[in-house]
Each structure stands twice: as C-alpha cells, then as structure tokens.
Image (cartoon, rainbow, N blue to C red):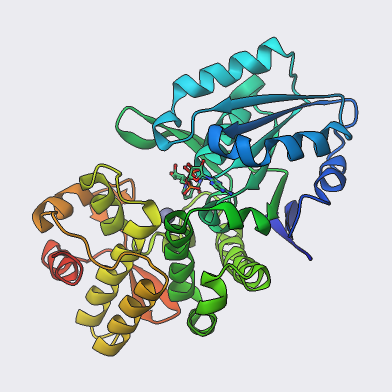
Length: 362
Ligand SMILES: NC(=O)c1ccc[n+]([C@@H]2O[C@H](COP(=O)([O-])OP(=O)(O)OC[C@H]3O[C@@H](n4cnc5c(N)ncnc54)[C@H](O)[C@@H]3O)[C@@H](O)[C@H]2O)c1
Ligand SMILES: [Zn+2]
C-alpha cells in the first residue's frame, strides 16, 4: 500500500504526505530530502520509543551520517519548554547544525514539541513528522502549527513551521489504545460534518471495519481526512479565515476540556462540542432534530463521548471567553448550515451556548 498527496502553499509544493502500511519506504522518502552526510535526531516519547524507535532508527541510519535520539516521558505534561531545553542540549552536544534534520516520531505531543524545537533551533531547521496516533495522522501532523504549553496554558508558545515530509505508517494504529483511537475519531467525524456529507455517510457505513482497524479502511479514512485538512490549510495557512472551520466543536469542547482539567481526551471533548454546536445549529433552523440525534449516535458508535457530567454550563460559557479563537470581543463560533457545510458565526450568544450545552451536559 502506498498513497501520496502533496501540500502546497501559494501554489508551490511544500511537502508530501506519504501513507504506507509499513516503514518500508521511509528511508527512500527521507533520502529525497538530501540528508546524505547529515545528522538526524529522532525525537519520541517513552511509549512510542518502546514500540517503534529501533526500527525507525535502523532504517534511517542507512541514509545519513549519524542518527541521534531524544526520548522524553510520554504525556501532555511534558509538552513544555523544559523538555524543549533538554532537546536543544542534545542537539548542541551532538553538533546538529542548520542543515540537519529532526524527526518527530509519535503523537501530537511529540509532533508539536519537536516541530517547535525545529522552528527555533538555529533559527529553524528541517523536520519531518512520523505521526503514530490517529489524531496526529489526521490533524496535528499537517498544517505546520507547532508549539508547547506554558504552565496551565495550552499551546501558548509556538510557531508556524512546515514539515518537509509527513510519513504515515497506518500499521502503528494497531498498538494504539481504544481510547486514543476513538479520540482521533472525534476529529474525523468533525471533518465530515464541516466539509463532506458523503464522507460522513461513508464513515457510518464503514464503522465496523474502521473500529476493527482494518488497515485499508483506515487508510481510506485517513486519506480523506488529510485531504480535507490539506485543502483548508492550503487556502488559509496562518488561520486568517477558512481554517477556523476546523474549530467546529472546539469552542465548547476546549472549555469542557479545561474544566475537566484535561482528564478527558481532546477528541472526546471535540465530539461533545460538535453535538452542542449541532444543537445550536438546530435552534437556528439549519439542522433537524433527527440530524442532531444522528450526529450523537455516530459519535457514540465510534466510542466518542456524547455526554459529560459534573460541569456547570455557566462555567463552560465563562471558560470560552479566554479561548484563543476569540477575535477582539466576539467569539468565532462555528455552526453547520447543513451536514457537510460549516460557517463562522460571530453572533452566538451565551444563552444559545447554554442551550447547546443542555444537549450534552448531565
Ligand atoms: N499542531 C496542531 O495542529 C495540533 C492539532 C491537534 C492537536 N494538537 C496537539 O496534539 C496533542 C495530542 O496528540 P495525541 O492525541 O496524538 O496525544 P499524544 O501524543 O499524547 O499520544 C497519546 C498517547 O498515545 C501514545 N502513543 C502514540 N502512538 C502510539 C502507538 N502507535 N501505539 C501506542 N501508543 C501510542 C503516546 O505515547 C501517548 O501516551 C495535544 O498536545 C494537542 O495540543 C496539535
Ligand atoms: Zn482538535
């Protein structure tokens, strides 16, 4: 299996997303980036290191001068400047220079952190993404957003820095926990809802294969989701306009995530946020009650959360106010005109948000 798409910026090809069911063509793809005689630093976390580091290291050793590795403890709590600092130290001690390459091997935490280090080390070095979670394969590895958390503030420090290659080995999905897999499904269902009703239907029709992690079905799904993300980021690389549509489900989802102290996975919060935003779209007369119910059933069928307990709706609404999606004093709320078509609405009131939350809070 090998699939490929190219991400462009201003009409110019910037990087390829290559999808395979092994790491078999990784060295060939990396060799195209002129790394012969160069050093490579593989950045990964403690969980992924135990699963895939050895194979990736061996494969890359053949196409460059030296492979260095940097492993940090898995978990969002380590996506911070302290870990970045330790990584800089490894890079300096191993003499990595401007023309060398960083490799992010792991989920979104590794990708964001390694990408940020690549954006800033020596004012920017090349990096590639090897995403190993479903969420990172359809979302965080594409688009060039990198960054780390600062104290309790998520993604507060960051940079736009495009990868030179995204290499997806769909087989890595087979070792992922069910919870992490369904978290990725939250973002994937969102892709269908905002851009492609036929894809949303396809997801429902192929649920069994997807949940059984049939590799062909997963590859078809990742390919379509990446296509949607690619189109959006190509049109709007620095999030001035259309890219905001990807935030469907995120205004309330993020707020719930915060109030739950990040104990609920991101994609699950997004799923809940999508249902609440769909309920607001229904109040506006865009969706029918049956369609909102269908979205809820779909989330449930893919084991994405569809209800949350123990959070106060007034606090959720208050928490949306310091969301980064604020623009001046208005929130850029994303609603659905219909299934497969999203738009930015700047007039969503606190009352409407509370009504939307009624659909998901218990
Ligand atoms: N840059 C962006 O555009 C963007 C977009 C969305 C999310 N993000 C960021 O992504 C992060 C979340 O990413 P995530 O959901 O991938 O979490 P993660 O990177 O923490 O990975 C989740 C867990 O799965 C483990 N894991 C990874 N791959 C595995 C595999 N193949 N088999 C078994 N275990 C594996 C990890 O070690 C980790 O414990 C957040 O920090 C979020 O802010 C960034
Ligand atoms: Zn998200």
